[in-house]
Length: 138
Image 1 (cartoon, rainbow, N blue to C red):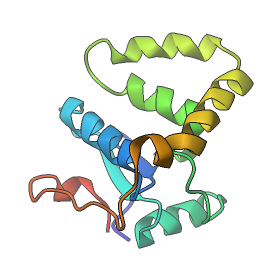
Image 2: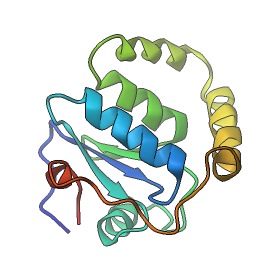
Image 3: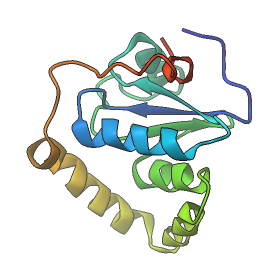
């Protein structure tokens, strides 16, 4: 695994074979102009090591995980924190934190359960472009 990320960086762990997840990573890459987010597929060595480090199941493929300030956030909390770290109007989605977490997570879980059917999946994790490679953990 690479060296720990500086406090200003955040690590996004995502399902590397999920088309929706890969599209979301590309979306974040395009809007994170300061390069604060790093990425690792949950299936990768770095992803599994981080899951273990934060006491999360290595089989946790149905959610996004955000490592930030030494803490791991999952599901809707992770998604809203990622949006808060982007430019433009995306941080306004933070207002959704007013919705009780069980309701937010129920919607998140419904989408996660159907993501392969709705958006498809890859046979293997997508590879970053050469100019994005430094943003991905090995």
